[in-house]
Image (cartoon, rainbow, N blue to C red; front, side, top):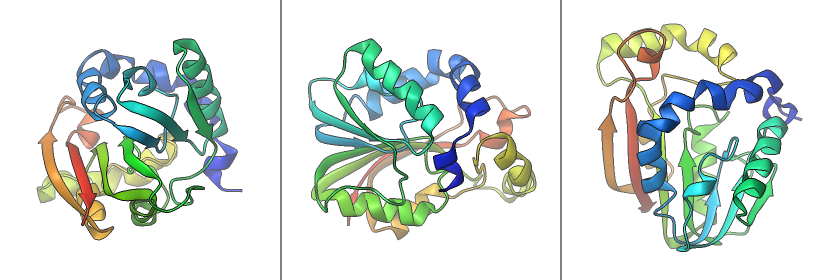
Length: 213
């Protein structure tokens, strides 16, 4: 059993409170675009507490979501029940998706690749379960492009991982996406977090849509 499968009880208990400000500001627009733009048979990986669930619309004909942490998954189930949305929930890691090849039209990933154990393997699994015409809709915080910021992200990562349930502030997520065999249809860099500690360490974010190359 992996650490994610064992779960992070304390982190799950404070996660929604910890992210409440972001959810009321910039994350609302992000979720409306990323989850709200999902179509057909949809898979969401790393669903967390289910923050994306209210944003899926009728274009998402069927929604399946995975989450390895049982404490997060419990909250995601409650959220799905609370909004009356039928979502097929599975306890599974992004690195080992229990689905057939080419079985989804859309995969949604928001703030996931920062914390998975093996991001390249997870993205390769995403590519496997996506139809050739499908799309990966994603959002994540990423490594600074300049050396000064990246240096401090590298320095803080061991502590950040411990406090943040495995979150890495220093990952070049876009590079992993391309290495896994995707091409970005569009990608946007933003810095929604304030340039002050501790959020300065996760300030650069990317939002994008990628397709199997």
